[in-house]
Amino acid sequence: MNQADTPLVMNLRPDDNATDLLVNRVTHTPERVIFALPVGDEWSDVTAREFHSQVVDLAKGLVSAGIQPGDKVGFICTTKYEWSLVDFALWFAGAVMVPIYETSSPAQIRWIMEDSGAAAIILETAEHSARFDEVRADLPLVTTLLRMDLNDLSKLVEAGTTVADEEIERRRTLAVGSDIATLIYTSGSTGKPKGCVLTHSNFVETSRNAAGALQVMLQEGASTLLFITTAHIFARFISVLSVHAGVRVGHQADTSQLLPALGSFKPTFLLAVPRVFEKVYNSSEQKAEAGGKGKIFRAAARTAVEHSHALDAGTVSLGLRLRFALFNRLVYSKIRAALGGNTRYAVSGSAPLGDRLGHFYRSLDLTIMEGYGLTETTAPATVNLPQNFKIGTVGPPLPGVSVRIAADGEVLVKGVNVFDRYWKNEAATAESFTEDGYFKTGDMGSLDSEGYLSITGRKKEIIVTAGGKNVAPAYLEDPLRAHPLIGQAVVVGDRKPYIAALITLDTEMMPTWLANQGENPAMTLDAACRNPRILAEIQVAIDEANSRVSRAESIRKFTILPLEFTEASGHLTPKMSIKRNVILANFAAEIEGLYSGHEPTTGHIAVEH
Image (cartoon, rainbow, N blue to C red; front, side, top):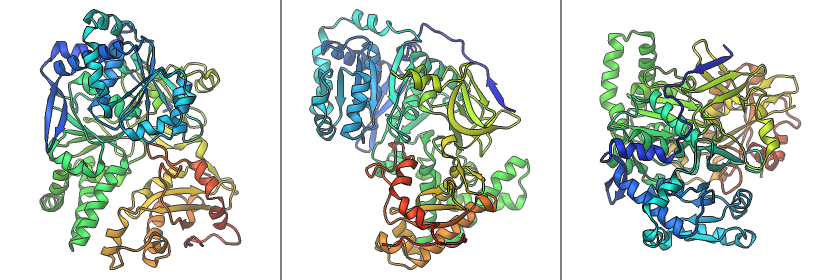
């Protein structure tokens, strides 16, 4: 199959804009709780009616501050309730949010504000303000600056009391579906960020149709705790979808407090990237190892995977049922409790989860529905459904979306979710669409006979070895990153005689792993890169990844770098994707050392200092 289409489940309403999602929610269920604010160890609920009232009050304040319909407004803020409050208030005032990652550098802030032509910016903290101050002189169009840490939002509400309700109603109804709703800049993993124009229809129609497809997960009583950055379209879309569907949403930006927050909030579904599920699994395994129960955990993990496969086959033997019941009491129940106890579904994106973890969590009664999408597709293009999912795929197209596989294997997408254009960049826009209107995602993939999509890697990242073998690096990198000791893995080998890899260690997990191996848990990173046990363990992970591919595609050498890839170091994007071109340039000498004067082997070498 080279094309899959899923018909709309909700008729298009081209005159509606994103504010209608909130207005309709208030009309139908004004007292339904749609947000909850942290108050100590408890949560204070906010109903749809209360949220709407706060949105209108803030919109009036924005009007009083001089924000005009169509104005672009930059916003830097961590993941918290104010994200949705400001988002909807700007829409009610007729304005357009330009989200900026809270970790963005002054140069990145300047580019986004300048390119977008933003007239105002809202900042959460003094540190955000300090970064903006470095470039403020270069942004003469910015006439309004608001600081949340100085209580400017409350001051706005007070100043807006003279603005009439009728003016807010006039402004909120100005936009139709085809008008710009937000201008989101790509993370810049391959160059300067491009502004993606997402329309009101992108949010409205994608929300309405996604809710129809995911109604089992979004039924009355559903709740979620957001902890990934809302500046990214993934969490931003879920926030809007939740308002439409009446889902109770909490926020926790501090991931060190995530487990206590999950315990008190008790969400029914989660939104996360695979690294979160890998961390939960790896932490559980290492904790069991430290308590002398490592063998029990690994036996439980194997049983969970076996149980899930048996469910797919339609028959679970008595012996397997008994083993599963035992481990459910000893192991699985504790992991479910750590996730809040009520979590039954999760949506995972940005990278493959892997079959092993998919089956493991499925047997814990946590259905992880992998999905696929980009900023240009308003987040989701495909997603597995609660009632019909396939582990190892990213699911079928959402209602109102078509997916086609081009002759060269590139994934093409068309539908209600696809963005309008790149901001002030006609050339990039034209280059990104086929003649019949399909968006070229840049990802490689395939469709099975039932229209379920699988992603194999980025088109521009395909490695061609000196022997002419095409290798998708992500197919090797993703399983490597699932190992508790590995922070990042970057596969190299373009025009080289064989495939090799750069490895960084997970410094958060490393001390626990070392202690469990009888090694010094305070070992320095520099020493760890040479430690024989660590080298041997990385080789085990390499061998496991190599078992997925042919010998010509396998990793023949690796080197451990005595550092971490971070956003601050310039090697990761805000959504934690690697900046491959930067890494290849920065570590060119280390890469060359993997090839110069050495025959390919299955061994490993350490970085020389």
